[in-house]
Length: 302
Length: 140
Image (cartoon, rainbow over all chains, first blue to last red; front, side, top):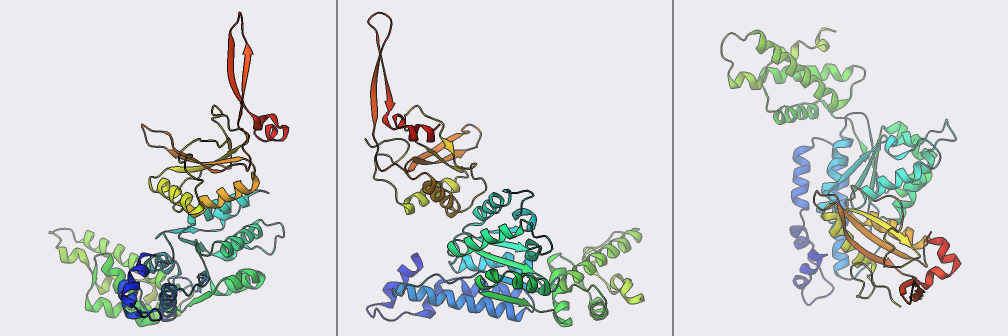
């Protein structure tokens, strides 16, 4: 580890001290955390846990530089939460974070679901799972909707085989691979209950809370900005009302609902511009979503 | 007799860390890595038994090392080699090949003379390993 070797002369003659602040400066943790705060709104418990993990890895590096060897910490994680709370988004960034902290060697995520791991006939599952594991080595294996791996209603289901191989590799290749399981809270709980081995091998169970109304508004503005649109003031107020109403409705899925609402607002904006296509359309008009585009939503009429 | 085939074979056997580095290089070039094994070290024995299919789309040597170790474990007393295949147009061939396992005892080769027409004598070699029935069976 080059960073550690460079850090050594600084810690100087005193072989029993290490400058954590200097190590922090050398690593990119600060920049990564700032990026996380900027791009992800809310998610307090998630960010806290990531910060804790970062601190752990930094201290681990300091310990190693003083010759205090220990088993590498296990960083397998499970993300649980309601739909649209950012589980997949965070998983995509986890690789970047762990790579920046020098925990994994490659900045890559292999994202799979049950279909990629479980085969269709006897003897098909093991090679399939192993191949995926080999591809993910050195980075992060993200298993979305992991509870589908285990189907208790069918005792001959091959999902169990995939779980066993996964467990074995998670244990043996702890420093080569980080496994992240994600899914809805209640179903993941049942999954872990029926697979205690899996639950105990995952050190970090992170729960993604639902967003508040203000957070959702911030998210909406971030999304709008990323798509090079902007909301005028009236549209912002309307969107706030919209979010309040939408949250009370069934099948509300947090940020995903907001994205869908914005996509529909874009559709209406395009139609409004198209209907009034007599004169030239200004750049500002093309970029602005106004209150009328949001107000037309079904949510307000119901 | 120590077999010298493929890269690095005149050097001491590669350690696991060195093998990993070589595989890392191959993966960086975008080559597909494969593992093969045989009991017959004859230089003309080009096609060894494949240990699974070649590994495509890997990013990290840890995945290949899994297979290397599995193959070694199953073929303790055989030759195991790692190949890297370059699929780029113009190459489309093996770019790297090196041994990662060899038997504890390497018996070497026997020189065989066979009488031809007239007083002509043909020479060929035959690996002693193939004379042992178990070995012969394994490499078939």
